[in-house]
Length: 155
Image (tube, rainbow, N blue to C red):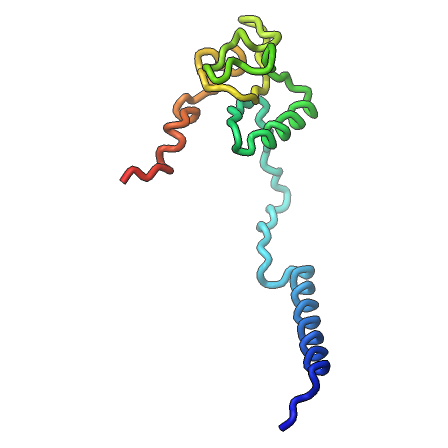
């Protein structure tokens, strides 16, 4: 038995591949059985409220992609007219702990800043007067050790 020439086999393979690709795109466009959708809300039900957080602290660290997050936070804050805590010079005392006196425009008892995102080491006692109401902070949630303890395998 003689095989057809190589060009015929390639044409057949190309046609089969084209049919498979077309079917795949059609299934994706039409939703197909694999697409998951959220169940529709009951008629007359109000949408659930969603409010963005406007008091943010981001401790930026070296070589972890923090600059990208800071860029997003700056755009978020600028679009909403939020106040940023910026350092007098170029840092908040890094690598030492955060110090409130290094924040440009900070006065004790003055209006709080909305966003702090810069290279700094966490210091809750210095951060409270600058940014947030102390009742809004949970020190256990902010402790890097407590946050990462479940991830450590000390066995």
